[in-house]
Amino acid sequence: MNTGSPVYALLLVAGIVIGTVYWVRVGRTDSRLLLIYFAGLACAFLGAKAAFLLAEGWLYQNDPNRWTVWLSGKSIVGALPGGWLGVELAKRLLDYRAITGDRFAMLLPVPLILGRVGCHFAGCCRGSVFSFGQWPAVQVEIGFQLLALGGLWVLRRRRLLAGQHFHLYLVGYGVFRFAHEFLRATPKPFLGLSGYQILSLATAAAALAAFSHRQKSNAPLC
Image 1 (tube, rainbow, N blue to C red):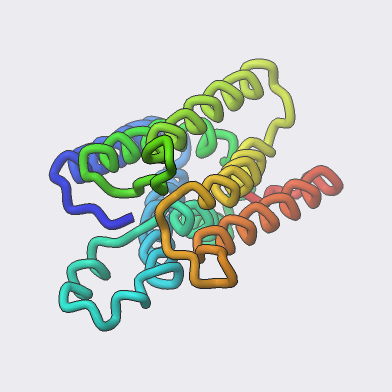
Image 2 (cartoon, rainbow, N blue to C red):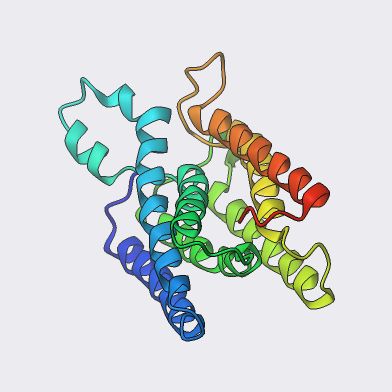
């Protein structure tokens, strides 16, 4: 996504603040949790930037505004695996063995919904144009996040698949994003696929493998 809207920036900050407030409160029981959150947040931003550059940023190398595009471009497709990796590394460095994924999963849809509302105001992340009009890509993504939030709430309330919620979210979003990309106005230079589709499938596959591993061993992967 390529955004320069002040509304988008404001909503992005709001999402970060919501997460920070929650983890500051949780961190009172163990200060390592706040460090883990910030490690995940930092790596999420790095992943978001890397995903954009790999998926479509390189296509702007001859564009006179390429530096503006490169600096502003980012994608949730990279933020999710980037944040996951950051949390994993921080937990290993801090020797934190408890499972944190369920908490991260429950919080994720809220800032992502705010981010998509920002996309609406920024005019980015548009859908492809068909004979019936433009596909409402942003609204559909918001709908997915609302459904995910409801599903995660049910899982948490009923204590179903404890410790697997983040993996399930990544698998769900990866599959959804792969399919939804066909209706989005994004470059598809890889045999008719976008870079975001390839990254989405890779993330879903990694999360599915982590899900399977935990089911077999109950190892605290995230």
